[in-house]
Length: 178
Ligand code: FE
Image (cartoon, rainbow, N blue to C red):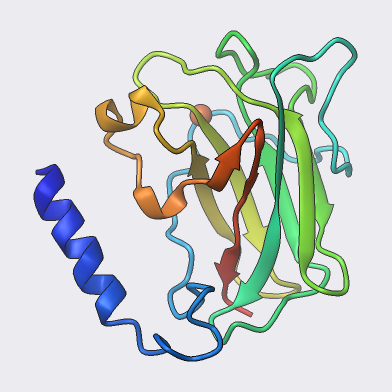
């Protein structure tokens, strides 16, 4: 199962049309995979790039770009993040660990929050909606590399892992319709 998945991933990487080009580093030929929204999305989240609260431990910083399928940075793209707290619970009353932001003129974003806890049946993950101005909304989830829960979670995808994850900091680039 895992071996055949790996083989498929390798096959996909070799088939990338832009391999060897200036953009070989950025896997922007393919749009970021869509995933289910889950039951806990809420609209009207506060606009903020830091979801941190006083006394928070396990700080997580994720930064990166929103780009188009043609690798062009997307300025003022919407990113709306929500995730479970340190106990694996969602705040369905208020907006704890919920917030949206817009990419800067270079398509960059930076999210400050905590590493969410796992909850039954799910690997550690962060929900997110990403949207270039006026374009189709992408709903997906981000995962943590080497998390023991990944192999037990049928939704987990390696291409949705936060990359270069070290000491609470990592990267992710969203590729959206733009
Ligand atoms: Fe969830």
